[in-house]
Amino acid sequence: MNSFSNHPIGLLPVEENYDPSKPSIPEFYSGKDIFITGGTGFMGRVLIEKLLRSCKGVNKIFVLLREKKQKSVWERVKEMHNLPLFEKLRKEAPEMLDKIIPVKGDVMLLGLGLSTDDLQMMCNVSVIFHVAASVRFDDPLKDAILLNTRGSREVFRFGQSLKNLSVIMHVSTTYSNPDRYEIEEMIYPPYADWQDTIRIAEQFDEETLDVLAPMYMGFLPNTYVFTKSLAEQIVNDYKDKLPLILFRPSIVISTMKDPIPGWMDNFNGPVGLLVGCGIGICRTMYCDPNNVADFTPVDVCIKAMIVAAWKKGTAVEQR
Image 1 (cartoon, rainbow, N blue to C red):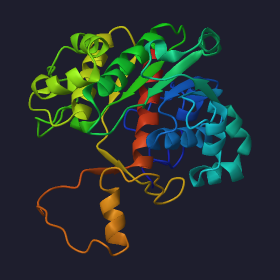
Image 2: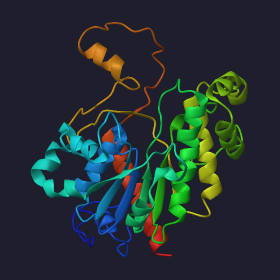
Image 3: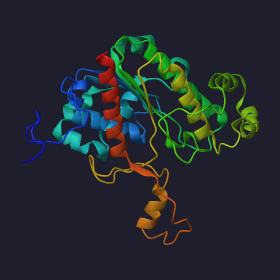
Image 4: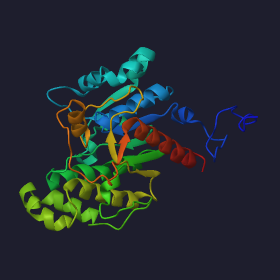
């Protein structure tokens, strides 16, 4: 006899700590307003597509956007609708695309640059995915601080204004603690004070900060890992005020299979090298064969984010 035959949900294997009193993942997201930063980025697009296709009861997905290249925020959303990534959703449930609501703003601005009307429109948001970040290693220190560090603080402040908040997920990186070979599920001591660092970025010009950067960052290799590590300290300081999740993916690459195999829209990380190998330009490499290629498919990463937010959100709602 199958070991699952007497289980309340039939023959399907379930999580070891399965709790029938908790809503399923689609049930948890049903009726909820969601706010996403970085929604037009690589991970953000996959997150939006997966939520709309697998959690059809979701109410609205508000996406923070800037006007870019003389295109309005609505035009940018329409462009996203037409990506190959959304082809499956366009065929199966095209009406779901209408649930994407662009909100004009910028993570680099105080208050996220949100208008009073937009703040009122989003008053019922209960789930936040903070995905926005600059992943460039050579950004000026000032820009990296304002986006990756201060921007995170502004998202958390917005979260504090919401009455129905269930969960905020802050997407960090495995490499925010580059001095450690093994990364545990904990927040490590800071490399600098995040509040002082934000004040310095606000008060000094870009050139002065670039001169100070090597001394201020110490041994950290670039402005990306430095400012992402500082953002983790903000998470630590807000953890008792907000239902927060700190999510640390490694190097995110193309989809494994969902919704289509191999989808990618950039050359970040190892992708450029892999493309060169695939088309025959790059035939040899000088490398250490003992090193582990620490990559994660974006669809696997996004599923983990959605599940983690569900687990945290259901724990908060059942208090």
